[in-house]
Amino acid sequence: MHTRNLRTAVMLCAATALAAAIPVPASASAASPASAESRSSAHVVAVDCFSNAQVRPDDFLLACGDGNNRLIEIQWSHWGPTSAVGRALDAVNDCQPYCAAGKFHSYPVIVRLDRPETWNSHPELRQFTRLHLVYTDGTPAHTERVVTHELWD
Image 1 (cartoon, rainbow, N blue to C red):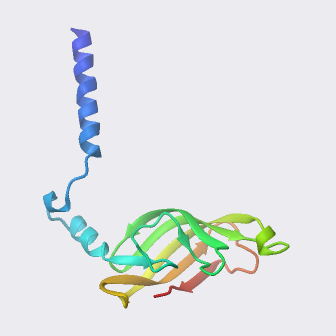
Image 2 (tube, rainbow, N blue to C red; image 1 turned 90 degrees about the vertical axis):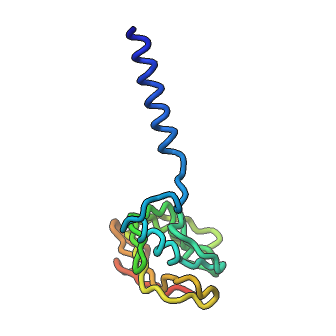
Image 3 (cartoon, helix red, strand yellow; image 1 turned 180 degrees about the vertical axis):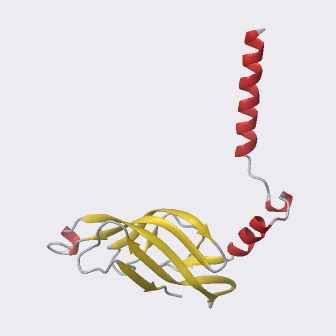
């Protein structure tokens, strides 16, 4: 009898895990404030160097010309219609003695995107136009603790 109960418990746990892993279509989910925010914020994007719209990107290139500065391992805690907030590592090339021979160093940062505006290339979308970084443990050479970047269109 004990084996049957154990087997049943294992099967129930497996079924629950499988059900949790199956995505639910947006049309099937109940309307709630959280799902309404998700739908509206899905139309607010971060535009990368290559004019690609991204929502909650894992990484984000900051130095489009030479690739010597990139946000990596971004973990978003909030992505909404007016702002997005997360934590990341800012990977910066020290360019010593010159950029091709330099080494990348990573600095933990808090990332905030804000000031959404209509994206000229895709008027159906809004794009964040400003990015703030707050360095939480050291900064790259000649860099302030808080940095603001205007994002491109």
